[in-house]
Length: 533
Image (cartoon, rainbow, N blue to C red):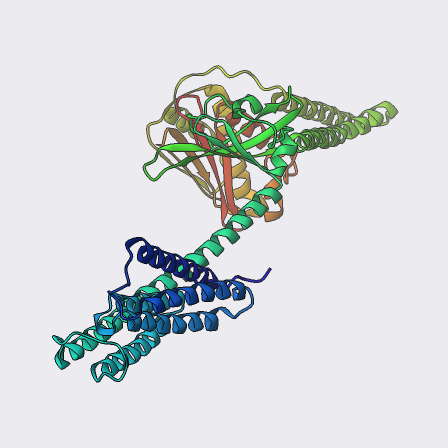
């Protein structure tokens, strides 16, 4: 469909107004018997009214065929001549209808534009002035009273011309202003419609469900995806509350950003986000709910967790087998040599010591594994952590490698924890630091141990100046049986992390190859982990 010309509706209004005015004019003349004796040419007035009726019919017939703007100009020009004819027939300077020219100027500026208003005012001024001049010089047969002089004609012409141009100016300004406002409103209306269509298309094509409700939680709108997830028909269902669809939503007034729960009797798992719609004064007017079906995702997560669990069990089993196979091989070799005989007493003594050593090694592996897989239960009690840590450093300092120095910087710390298990964590971290600083023939180093309380937690840092951790090994540091040492089970850090997690804390580290490693132990003061530990 083509765009409708903005002048067309105004032209229709002009035709309708003209028909109305002519009808009122004819009716008033007939009702009050005006004309006979009052006007020089009363019959001509009625003839003019008939002509105007005819023109109005012609205008109406040509409305859909003519070009709007030229058609409007033709009507305005003919209206000027019709008004002048009426003024002429009703007395010229003494006519009651000179105001019609002002109405026509207003109509031209309103229907066409500002320029048309001035054109109409100019045409009306010239023709009206010429008619009064001809009347004054009695060159046209329109009589006037003897009391009217030349100055009266001049003033009448002047005042009407001024009125016409002032009216043209004001109408033009108003018309321009209205046109600008109309264009602005039309543009904004177009933008609003485009935005409305865009928003509707976005909402309808969202993969997630989108629902809006009123302040009481009654559903107002639901997109296509929402229908598929909830099974509702938005064209049929009415007066349904959001809680009846998502029973895990207990209270809309309680602020929450995201929630998960089950619907349809546990057949579907839904994740949703709800936000309130508010007025400028902060009063809630309703809620917006964006939700999605997490059922398949949850199933995939469970399957993935199960696979990871079995993968971890498989890796752990392989590591256990590897750790046990080495001492078993040594034991088998020693026993075979003893069984064959032919060995000296010194060799037999050495083989027996090897058997005992490897048996002890097997026992340590089993003990550490049991401690990791089935840790002892916490027995928390008030602990002066600074005293416990200093005593641990004092004991271990006596067996520190040559050249290794311990520098404690520990403030008074009191926590609720299991002191024996915490001491095991400290032992592991300190011994690891000793080994890192004495590896590869290093000439010692410095182990700085600091402890302080901040934001409801205790942080203890063990910073050494050893070789650091190889970047490719950083992800495996806490893995069971992972070790870069020639001896050891690789369970020390795994057990330490397990102990700290049992206490509601954690262990983190950062390392720079060649510059050292810093382990940070975080422990809640009260025995319960605060937010963001």
